[in-house]
Length: 231
Image (cartoon, rainbow, N blue to C red; front, side):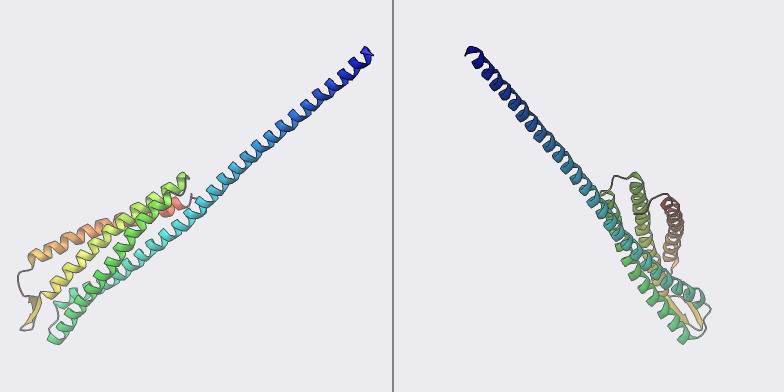
């Protein structure tokens, strides 16, 4: 009887031990699966975050380029108006007809006013593109994109300063034209314009030098862009 009891007890204890092992295994497996799911969820979230940042960067970089291109277009419009004004200004001193002189003078003044308006718009858009490129840079960890954004920030900054100088050059040219008069078949200044002419020449020289820097940075971006993967 005792042997039968010991046998039953052994079987019962063995069953209990097996049950504990099985339960422990299932608990461990559940914990392991939970950990795996947590890791997968974390990876998915990280991937989604990266994808979201990439989309944000692409969108913001595109907006930055739009602002930059608008600034470029406005600057080109200003350059055209300024060039027309200078062409008329360079020939007005040879004019011997008063009616033609007045037409030339008005053309110079109006084109300078138009150029000033264009350069104001250009400066505003260049300024917007500076902040847009800086914000775009925050949406990526890719060093090549950082470098590209930095180059565009530098170019936009030079463009902004160039627009400011262009505005001043157009303004001084307008002042010079407004100071012109026609007397006895001769074109001349109403009053001494040497100081005004000096301001015009100095600003024009700064404009030319900064324009060369702007063109250099544009070429640098074109070269750099060859090594940057498609955005």
